[in-house]
Length: 180
Image (cartoon, rainbow, N blue to C red; front, side, top):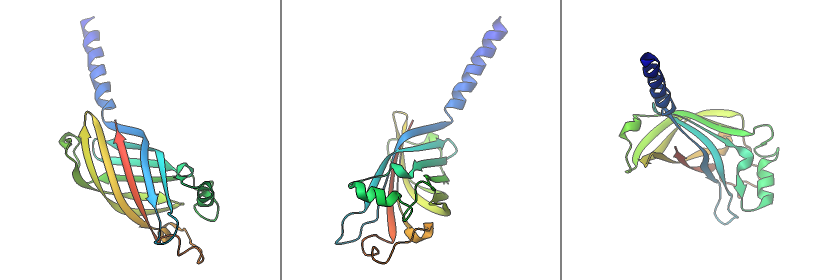
């Protein structure tokens, strides 16, 4: 009987430690902005991105493309159409990478600067990117923020010449994740 209790306690501790190896969110925010001066803002936000962060610094983020919300419904319709990102054929954008010099135990409420190296997939095209990040931990919640830019053409998006003045060649991306 005593052996069974010790085995049960050992298993519970093992399962608890396994469960603590990763943090997740389903409410991450990804914003992008591709505006040009003197024209209507081209910006959207997606507040339903999923992410997983493992203790070793491995991170994965998944965002549904049609989840981006624009100020105007017509802009959102055009964005998701076959002429632009074609969200029916390419419904997801993803990032898989590793945070350099990351140790979960070293995180504090004071944000620290890190680099994340990984692969960003959008519109069926994958490129390796290096992303700066600030990361902190308060009350068991890890806050991860990134700001970086990508070129539209690198991901197979062709901006027609009559719209080129209205849409930036480089898109600014801002990600906020609160992982538990």
